[in-house]
Amino acid sequence: MLGTQGQTQLLHVTCRKCQNSILALVLVNQVGASSVGLLTDLAYEDVLRFRSERAVELDDVIEVHRWMDAPGWEESLGRVYREQLSKVIRKRLRQTKKNEKAR
Image 1 (spheres, rainbow, N blue to C red):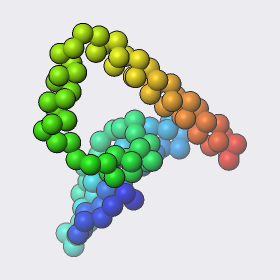
Image 2: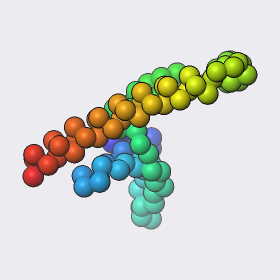
Image 3: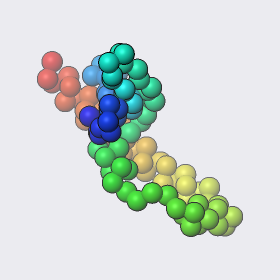
Image 4: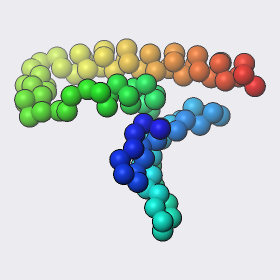
């Protein structure tokens, strides 16, 4: 569980078999339960990190627009994406091996 506000809970759930994850907002009250889920590639730790970061401000958006107006941003973004993707793949492989050993 990532957090609670009143009768609402935010959950991060990862399937043991396929390693896919969802973020779920669950409301439980006297009438019953309802939820909304969102598929995500974020690990539990990533969600915690993003929750603790500051909110996106207007100046942040303007800075991104300026960055995207400059030549070469596609190459920079591609490099960062490849690095992040590589980290995610390595992490998922380690988790899969760990789960297989636990069985």
